[in-house]
Image (tube, rainbow, N blue to C red; front, side):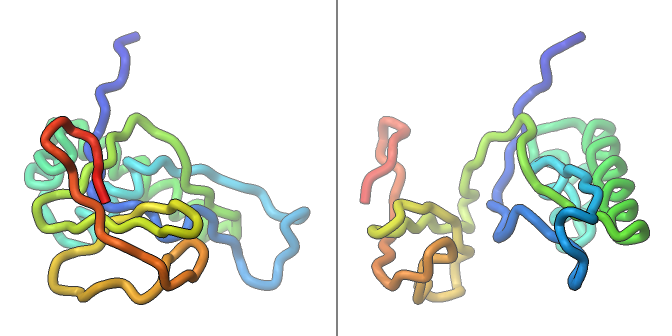
Length: 146
């Protein structure tokens, strides 16, 4: 079996776990969706990109994108229809902010996330709620600098 090529993802999930309200965790079955599958849903269903455009953004072929988004849709439908918890984790991904994204970091918890240009400076860290956030920039050697 050929190793999976890394998929380029331009958006970190805001949350990695969803469950039906009012149902205790011990009573729930759980399904898993990978970060690249969530990205495929975001590009195709939220942003309305064609499979070809979305495949280019994720650095995969149109056919591969179609398989990724198809599997993601089936998994999410299973969770919604059958009342299962949905976990977002894993997958062969490379997180990279696109040219339209800005990277931020939290001084308190060290969390990092991307925000689109034009949305203003974030008021608080999405992970811990602290106000001590700052902008990160990639340096010329590929690392990050505050």
